[in-house]
Length: 230
Image (cartoon, rainbow, N blue to C red; front, side, top):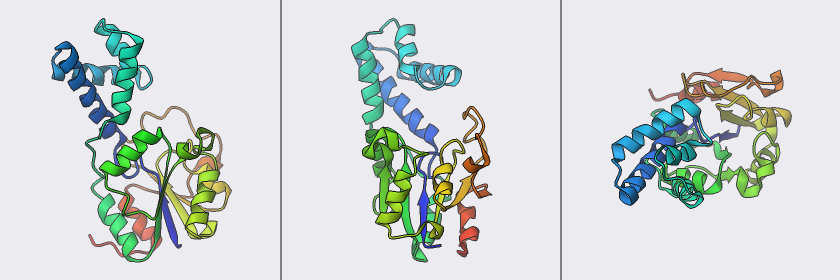
């Protein structure tokens, strides 16, 4: 194995932390604009999110507060997507990345999501200097988000790696692994407890499943033959 490519959300850090960071930003804005208590708005956002999931959180908040206008809704969406998130890597991620770099692996990230959001996460986590190539799929085009094989083929080309010499590590069986499986890459599913409880549905076929599973990111070091420091 020469190259390790990783997913970002819920693989290197907890995506829920980004959501909570965004909610706090929104709560502070609502406090500043309308005089409502920041903690109350923050708690209300969490309740809406837990009850209804993503998609209409801000619509419901503004409706409940009797503040809804299209402009206000778009303002909340803009602030959420553009804010500088207060997030950090999973505890085992920095050491795992360092050990892979130290033994000479080429490292990449392939991540879906709104480009502004993903780039802000990458900056907040200080990942630019740790990875050789980072591809946010929507920078290429929304039609090339996972499970498209295009970002994987691009990554392999940029890192001058054959598919059988690369592994993709992710957490979402509905989209992370079928693409790299299709082109002959190795795949590892990180199954952190509770991380993907909100995924609805099962993988359509076995092709969507990773070839190997681990409970934590640091466990991939054993698969890669890297001696762990812990």
